[in-house]
Picture (cartoon, rainbow over the protein chains, first blue to last red):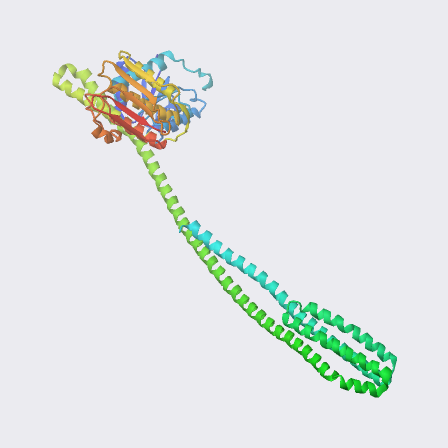
Amino acid sequence: MSDMVILLVEDNPDDEALTLRALKKNNITNEVVVARDGAEALDYLFGTGKNGQAIRPQVILLDLKLPKVDGLEVLRRIRGDQRTKLLPVVILTSSNEERDRLQGYDIGANSYVRKPVDFVQFTEAVRQLGLYWLLLNEKPPQAVAR
Amino acid sequence: MNFKGKVVSAFGLASAVLLSIAVLSYRSILRTTTDENWVAHTHFVREELDALLADLTEAQASERSYILADDETYSASFEDALTRVPMHVKSARDLTRDNTNQQTLLRDLEPLLAAREIQMRRAIASRRTGGLNAAIANESSTGSRQTMDKIRSVIAAMLHEESHLLVVRAASAEINSRRMKEIILFGYALAFVFLIAASVTIHREMAKRRLGDKIVARRSVELEAANKELEAFCYSVSHDLRTPLRGIDGFSQALLEDYGDKLDSSARDFLQRIRAGTQRMGVLIDDLLNLSRFTRIEMARAETDLSEIGRAVAADLRQSEPQRDVEVVIAPQLRGEGDPRLMRVVLENLLGNSWKFTSKRSHARIEFGRTNNDSSSAFYVKDNGAGFDPAYSARLFGAFQRLHGVTEFPGSGVGLAMVQRIIQRHGGRVWAEGAVGEGATFYFTL
């Protein structure tokens, strides 16, 4: 299961800590790569970062309001590139604004989950996401990727 | 007078003046023609009278020539001239038929002419029978000169009469045409004044409207800016305000989970209260956003089956609390013009309220129907729940207004405010009736 990396794109350290805690509490032990802004997330995906290694995560948990490059733009770049266009992307954000949901799905998000304020509910949401995207869901074949 | 009235009356008056001038001008032209006819008429009469006198004089000259020369050709020309005299009389009579003075003079003239004819014929007859001297004696004894003088004076009187008439008519025509000129000039000036007034009114109104358009344009720019600001504000609230709450709730929960055994019961209670507070604030933020969302979103009105929406909402409520025994009566065929999405929000709130406030009733009953009164038919949601004090009914629809404690019935007090906004956006009215402990009825129109 070591190749089943989760890419968490999250700028808020509290939300990052809570998400990691929720994953741990649900016994999801996959490696979690955390990108703290949109540019960093793109660096990880396209290998343009410091270590130069591109990652192909099992699922990307993407916040929308991000510094530098916002979440919708990150999604647009992912969908616009042959190497990453089939990667499962789950928008995980605070807002349930209609235009966010509409644009998110329009650009090609696989799922849209709103982070609940109640941490018990948040933990449950993360549990279900992990169960679905890491265990139940089959990854698209690598054939299209170089 | 309003703008339209002013313009219509100014144009109406100007048109009336111009029309009157047109009618008067036409009549004036007709009268001028008549005046010209009269001048011509006078000339005709004079010509006839002149011709009459000329023929009579010719007859007299022929008679005298015959007496002197005893030549029958003079007798023939005498007869010839004499036959023309009655024709002239007849023409003159026809021409002056409308003038009693001239007719009277003509009647005086006829016996004189007849007398003169007899005198001349006698003179000719006496020349034939008694010779030159007898004829001359006859001519001088019968008073032929006096008769001829009388004839001349009558004809002169008639000519004078015609001249006089011509002068009178010319004067009256002169007065008429002068008055007409005055009327036309004054009328045009008046019409011009009315048209100036109309154009000034139109100009002012246009300036006013241009100003109004500018104000409307500025307002809509302001409104658009305000809406954009509200949109940005809501977006920010939706994204940023909930994040710290999640932190507070999450780390409080982490404390409880990881260090619960090291805390005493009172510390754990504090943490629970912190969590309850943050969660409640999360709900408030969501309600606030929903409230503004239903003011912002675009409406799409259509014929909507409210009974069907009501049944769906009731089914959701039953599913949320399957243990409760609530009688929900929904009248069939409740239809109205509304946005189906917003109508669902209205019914979710009204039926949801009834569901909530009947939670302490053993036989809860909720009814959704329509008043019989067809002229101002209203939909209503009625329950036998906790009801409310009618003294506070005005406060029911204010945002974040609550008539019950949170511990008694949960809620943030946004639901009815939302209902009111939606109904008002539909151009309808919403109101409530009720009493403490006797249930509540909420009415709305679309």
